[in-house]
Image 1 (cartoon, rainbow, N blue to C red):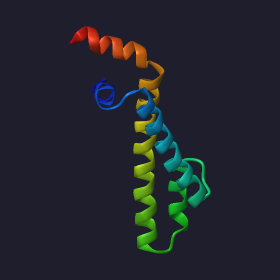
Image 2 (image 1 turned 30 degrees about the vertical axis):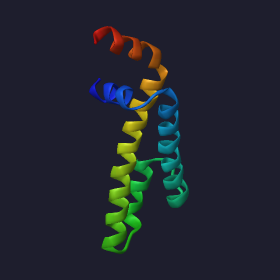
Image 3 (image 1 turned 90 degrees about the vertical axis):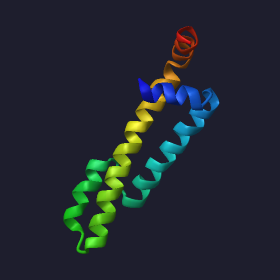
Image 4 (image 1 turned 180 degrees about the vertical axis):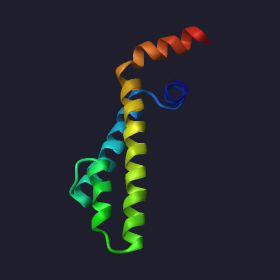
Length: 93
């Protein structure tokens, strides 16, 4: 709930939509770059790497991707319930 409060304090509805778009674009970039649909699929590609740098890059991207998916879920929850959460924030102030 803390993350939702922070989003409500820092962004209005339109900015939340922009944030969602940016997160989705980042996911699209990884999907196109690595030709996979999920971070788990990408992680399976580690077996095919033959250099430490490539393995490290994939592991970092998997971690970043999972974080973006988590962040996206919070942003989507906030957008979906924006009026309710905004009203709750006003009433609790």
